[in-house]
Length: 190
Image (tube, rainbow, N blue to C red; front, side):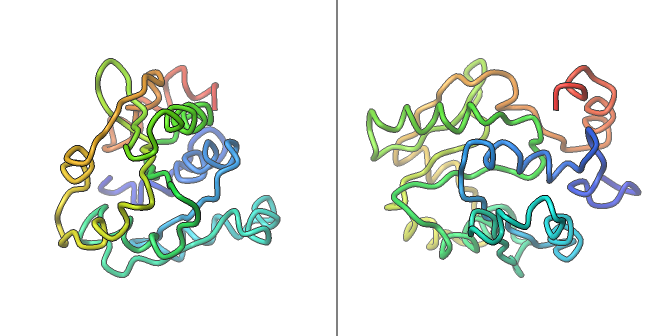
């Protein structure tokens, strides 16, 4: 994001991008593992606020540091895997503040059809986030090398897309996306 600094810390709808991204899984009653790398102290400090105290106390909100964050998103997922509970887990990106709690519930319901597959929220045939993965895949994910992408691994094992609306594919990757997010109609929806 250049001179704007860490995009996850940028203001959006009275909060920050990362806090907006955390809203949907928490509303869906998911246990949220926030992986922090670059700007780790600043991101973690946001969630030290009183509003998150009960979630932290209950163990529904925890932090994992990824010291290898420069290797990419797979390294962040790998850092969180030791903290995963249950037979499936969601992967979502911190720069997707428009994700909706309903997408998490939709994927969980779809998984009842076949628990061996992964499920991705999608829109118009384009896979997005969140993605629901079986915990049985954890050893394979841990074996991925630095710099590898998760998508080929997931697609090789079976990925079903579940239509979840445009929020599934809307993210904030660059200054133009950010400017559109703060100026657009979604601002009032968060």
